[in-house]
Image 1 (cartoon, rainbow, N blue to C red):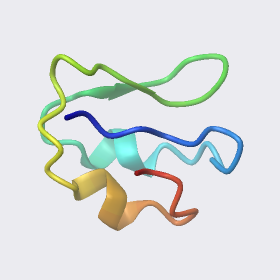
Image 2: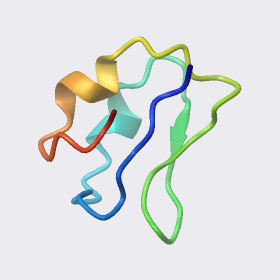
Image 3: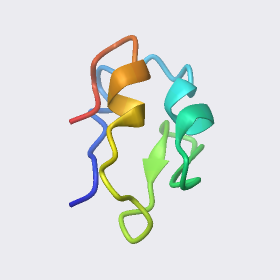
Image 4: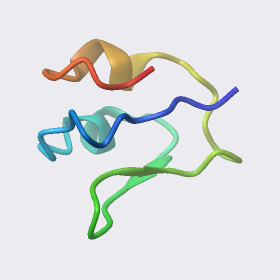
Length: 55
């Protein structure tokens, strides 16, 4: 199951994009977007998120 990013709480720092080992997270006009087909739910993005908005 892929992670979800609660964009209303996201600070758009993109730390999650930089730490993702599968290059699953990318930038968009609304904030970070997760490619659900590539996400392995490893938790790296959850651990680094300063806003704790990745579930």
